[in-house]
Amino acid sequence: MARKPIITLITDFDTVDHFVGTIKGVIYGINPDVEIVDISHKVASYDIFDGAFTLAQSYRFFPADTIHLVVVDPGVGTSRRPLLARSMNYKFVAPDNGVLSLIYEREENVEVRHITSDHYFLNPVSATFQGRDVFAPVAAWLSKWVEVDKFGDPITDYTKFTSPRPKKVGDNLIKGVILKIDKFGNIITNLLPEDLPQLFAENPPPFKIIINQQEITKLNLAYSMGKPSELFAIVGSNGYLEVCTNRGSAAKILNVNRGVEVGVMLGTPSPAVPESA
Image (cartoon, rainbow, N blue to C red; front, side, top):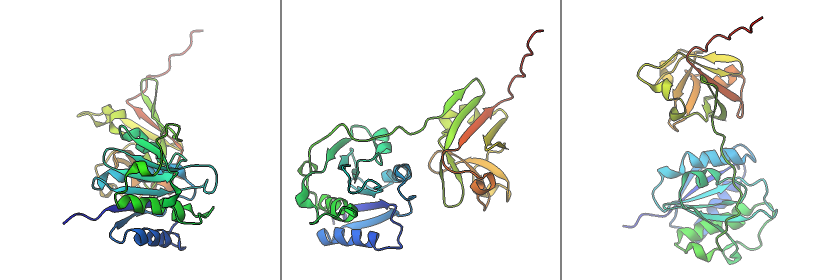
């Protein structure tokens, strides 16, 4: 028996209003045999990076041929284009506002098309709810195996941003930033183990993670290994270095949010040499 096609949904709509249910209704109206998976509808409102990060952490865990529909669209109704991107294993339907940027970084040979074949849209197309009238029907028709070249021509001038990279400062200091605060208040940084190989060596040097002028000096394997209200670091399931506390919010303790700088000092810095008289 053939597997049902899968469409995933990532939006900033929440579930308070009718938006998510309406999108699902459009999809089922075109393809009642599709399976819809909600990844998240709690992307921060209008937050394109949060949508991109949510997609990047989830898309590759789905079977090949999954269609990922992302509607985080503060430019709805403007001249921003609807896009259909295809990698080796997945298809992505989203606005051309950078929300697919981390896919462009992580996947090789991504083909991006401007969706122009409006006979696949609902009619009339709303200027304020194109998730319903444009993106949902395109995803639904894709799930019925309509070929991608039917939707529009390839483009190369699509919008993309570069995710923030850690920077080495001198011999001992690596600087990164906070990428996300998750629901539990864990602080997810952009630092990966390969950025800090000494920290994960057999005999690691002393270290301190500096956030908002506070220092964290312990590295654990799991959240439950820390003491209540004690701040510590782990490598989270997404591969990034996180700062956490057991059954509490590290973000509240440190009073931080996304974009705040994170420093990691490795070893003991050499004392400053006094200037000669």
